[in-house]
Length: 230
Image 1 (cartoon, rainbow, N blue to C red):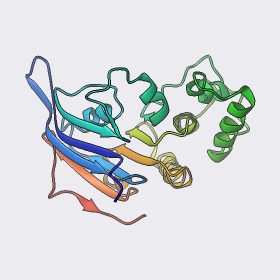
Image 2 (cartoon, helix red, strand yellow):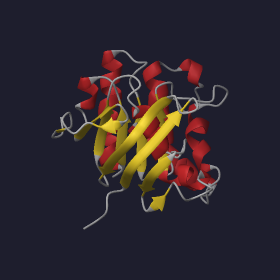
Image 3 (cartoon, rainbow, N blue to C red):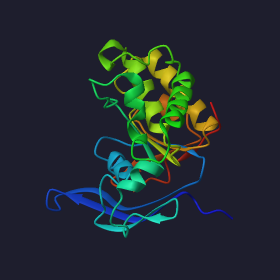
């Protein structure tokens, strides 16, 4: 039987010299290819959890295994982040003076592909997100939804095992948000990638295969629901 792609055991994290508990013995397994939404009230630890999975922060104790890599032991995690993880944030974090094509290509620059291979991958993703006609535009010429689509293409460009999305529709109106959610789900299936999404919106969370509720730094078993595809 295949092991889960993400295995988290007794994860603990405190901030402000121990005064704030973000994670308090959290345990969670996520299967390869699964789409999981993480919900919880403000301060429950859900964004901290996402940062731990993406190796953007380190725990005080516990273990995080991601695709066979123990993040609590491995010292240099920069290659892990670039090859295994794709990030989609609420505010998309595009570089304003680069055009759409250049923004999507950035994660590939330290890889081994030649320029033609990189361009083919970038253009394939931009076509998938419906932006093949905007490749020379800079972010300030795009709508909020278009900027988020660029961010999604950028997150997928290195064929990551896992996409981590933190409130990916939080800055968008409901109609545009729905478009982004459907795009994420479709690409999750087409690219065969594991998708972990933090959200505070129940209707957004229901796009996932499973909802995990985090409360007081732990997974709340009573709140977890198994859902079929919507």
